[in-house]
Length: 328
Image (cartoon, rainbow, N blue to C red; front, side, top):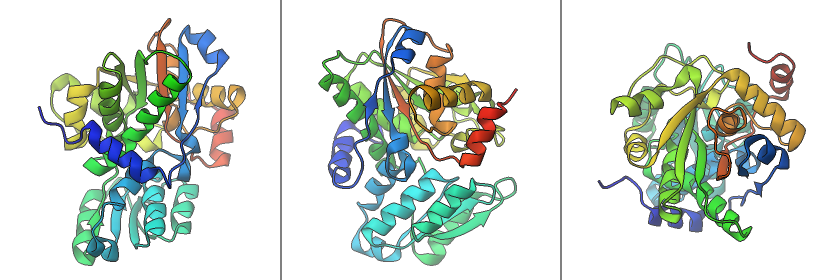
């Protein structure tokens, strides 16, 4: 089966990103190792530009625009992190950007996106179709639509996070990863990471993690077709997707071994672990992969385990509220 991206696409994305993206640290935690019995390697994309891995895919996609596309600019839809990523990437590349965001997106994400100079169009995610709005604006304004995950250049860019993680583990003198845990929303991150892992560490088990309230990918893989769900009621706002993408689902069917789910309470417990033990601010969505390991949803004792910590964008008031009054 021919997949939408291959390892060469991820290598090319790494070259484009090298001058502009942060090479985020891969960190260890003695507490995490003791709790899980594994050797755990956290790839800290909460320390990436705009505070999330999304910068990788957005910049890689926009950097490939033709001169005509750059003049017209990019349009996208996003709850926040991809919005900021496209806005910053457009600014760095000298092009206009229009971002379609839900009116209930975290205030800091809306403010940050506007701060990068993007034009913001707000919509009601419970009543309106963001993809339809995006297609309409792209047609009216002659802009290029760059969706948050279902785009080959976006997927390839996201895969550079796993490429760096695997390189970092090797540089530490460790053997190849036995498992790689990645959060799942629409599937862009795990698609790119799975392709990288399959090429560099063929024996590595790739495990996706979704919110319990929004397990559309888990259902889709079980049924062999894309399942649509209602808007998930979860604190993991970056994973409130209604369905996987056509391109990402094709990769996940081929390259992802398993998809697990975690509860909102487990996400908050993992937020607390990162804050107390590793001094890291991680948003709920960014905790999905780590929560599956730290909360015992999957047991990987004796294994070398990579964990993608996908982002850290959360209002500090909301962060304090969740840690003080976790979900039941």
